[in-house]
Image (cartoon, rainbow, N blue to C red; front, side):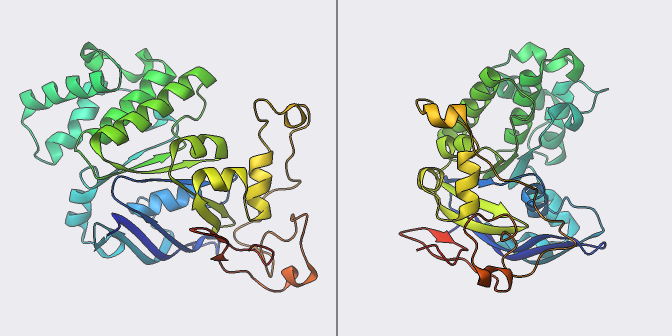
Length: 315
């Protein structure tokens, strides 16, 4: 049974922008799913939709089954109980996610107290333990966010996500704006904690290499839809969809002089969600587009064992 099952999820804003279009994804207990794509492809909107964190201007249809319950139809009280305890989220940009005028220990303890998992004294002990678990001294609980480095603040966000022992963690660009060394430390920390506590992970990033190293499976999104899905390493090394290949080729690879000297990419940007092109939405940028791609949309189809791709040339 899947811990998270997303079925035909659509997210539309009152402006007419179709930010997420018919996404179907699953995450099994203890497994790790990565979601990749450029900015504007719907990754963060999808993450927010999983816990109904989007503004009131967003219309959601489909279903998001978390441990068998549909998040989209939950009453407010049940939804409040599920957040942090059933699933939690690590937002990108920890400085903007933490309250600047409250000590970090109080912020980590807040969900523990709200969910009634411990009293004030026990919550303080739990906070100290969580900080040590993510590589920070328990004494840092008295610090304010501005007194910590970017990497330390991101560790605080991870500690907060773990506070109520959720079954699923959604990590939305958890290493944004961090230097390469700190990024590697944070990624290893997430991977270690997920393995030790048997937590499911849904990680969002624009970097396929990061997701290939961290996740079991990888889904590539473009213009609000999943255009490719499969085992993470296979998608990274041999994508079946031309967009997946372009994302992979945009990053130079160690030991490959050609990619280091001339990393490849794609011209242009993803389309405006309020004015999507006809046919396959990727065809205006696709280097191998056929004439039919301008008029015929492509659904996900089998593209090898355990793999799917939304391309007429996939197979």
